[in-house]
Length: 178
Image (cartoon, rainbow, N blue to C red; front, side, top):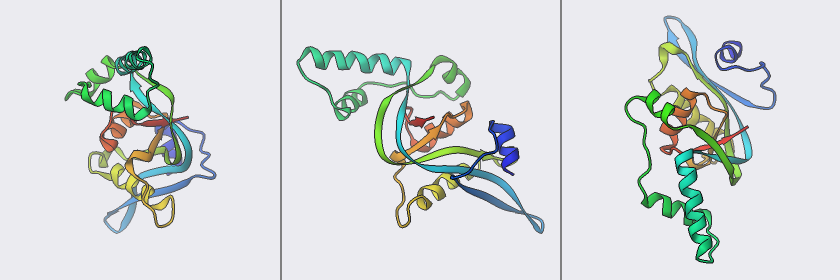
């Protein structure tokens, strides 16, 4: 199964030290694997931010500095949330072609759920399987604790992975790591 995941997503087959969860569905008498997630605990991640937002954020930082203030992450988020931000149109390819994504400075430290890889069989996509896999990982990473969505990070997401991350976190500036 993981060979098929690595073939589609890229990878060397090495999953040592990572947790793996498989999604199974009944197909007649047999159960078939329809999805897989490889996850780990992370100590830090970076925000994925589009260049327009990055330029806007830098402008806000400069405004704060001109006033003799050093902005916190909360100050910047508050200012950015008052401004209109781009949202994906119904055509995801138009949106991703228009907005080139880049990773910025480390903003989050602490217990993070790192999604190393997530895969759903093409015949079973758009059925919330990826969401269920991430939810299972969030509740399994630390015994007795469900990791908040705000602490989920994605490792080098593909274009489809970026769409999933935006949808799952309900943010365009979700966390990433390498």
